[in-house]
Length: 229
Image (cartoon, rainbow, N blue to C red; front, side, top):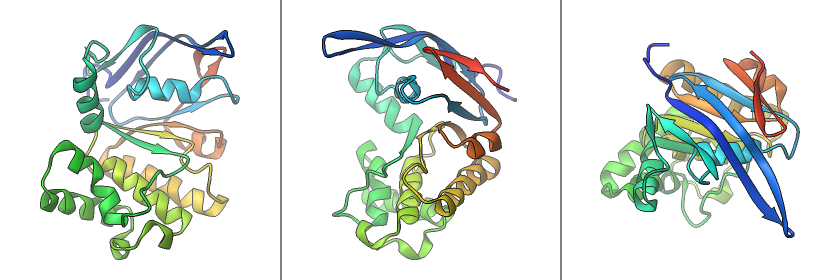
């Protein structure tokens, strides 16, 4: 890798939740480094904390202890406003369910992060059009969400996550709600974005065929990460 330090460093992260009055220790000292340009699969049994780890990586959840560094800088020292700005500009998210806004078309959905950042509509539209073309949605700009297939909706979700050219893409079971053939087209898209555009990605998945195509796998067991390869 070309970078002198990891893009992301997870250092001894602990995270617990209170459920029905009981404390559940989900992450128990997770440490992990992710280099610029890597595609890392986070795998493991259901309920071991894969999504929680992704949420901490994406600063959606603050750890109880430990830290996350982006390019060597701790991000959880930021106040909520600065952290939200960091998240908007640095991290792209793709979830199992696309979370598109049904009242808007593909272009408008893709523009949202840019508009939230404060860009004017023209600039945001230009960025959104460019990334929609990149993910194969050139002729679907003005289609409402309900007019798109499941695979097309997820392509728009990927475009939305990348419209601000974030440093890292975090994906949580991005094809778990799709049929096998459609899911494989999304896998191909994510891998091509890494290969051609250098997108760094961390993908939580139960799909071992996808995991085996990525540059590295990390298994989560008993709240800790165990490298596979």
